[in-house]
Length: 221
Image (cartoon, rainbow, N blue to C red):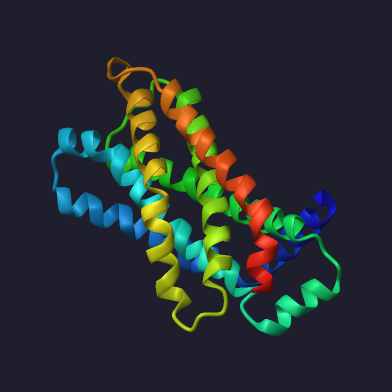
C-alpha cells in the first residue's frame, strides 16, 4: 500500500511541477483572497488582527478545494481510472498517494498564507508550536476530505461546482478548530489550543480511515 502511495504521490507531484497549476493559479488565488479580506475590513489594525484567524482558515479552505479539483482532474477520465486499476495498484495506496501529493502543496500554501497574515494583519504569534500543529493537522484533514469527496463526485459533468458543495459543509470543524487554535497561538489569554488540536486530530484520523476503506468502491462505482 505505501509503495503504491509513493508512486502515485510522485506522479502527481511531477505533473504539478510540469504544469505549475498550483504556482500560477492556486497560490495567486489564495493571496488575492487574503488581500480582498484586508481591503474589505479596511485600515483598522485592531480589527485585522482580531479577524486574522478566521480569514486565514477561510483562505486555506477555499484554496484547498481549488487544489483538490486540480488533483482529481488527473484521475478525471475513465481511461485514466481504468489504467490505474489495470496496473493492480491498491486503492488505499492510490488514496494515500493523492493525499500526500496534495498535502505537500497545502503545507507550502499554508506557509505562504501565514506569512501574508503576519504582514497584512499585524499578527504576532506567541505559540508557534500550537499554530504549526494546527496547520499540519488541518492540512491532513482537508486533503483527506477533499480527495474522498472528489472521488465521490467522480466523472460528473458538474464536478467543478459539486465538489465545493460536498466538501465545504463537511470541513466546518476544521475551520472552527483551526481558527480557535490560531487565536490561542496569538493570544495566550484566549485559552489552551490543545483541545482544538484534538478535534483536528480526530477529524484527520476519521477521514483518513474513511478514505482508505471507501476510495476503492467509490472509484469502481
